[in-house]
Image: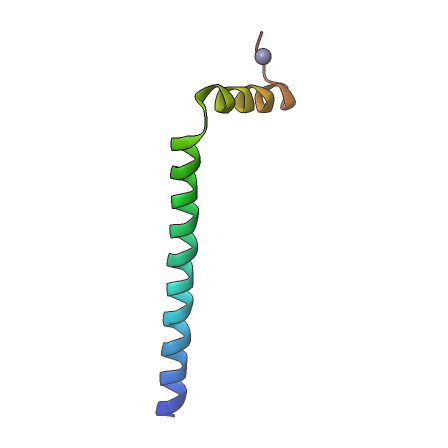
Length: 58
Ligand SMILES: [Zn+2]
């Protein structure tokens, strides 16, 4: 009984740690990309997405 509860607690903790790890990696990746990619490349990518989705542009 106690062992099962401990097992459950350990599993819950590792899932939470996994979620924190994944979010941290995603966040760091976002900051790295936003900080290091050339602004013109970001602009071109956003522009392409706008055209691909049929938004009015130029
Ligand atoms: Zn355009």
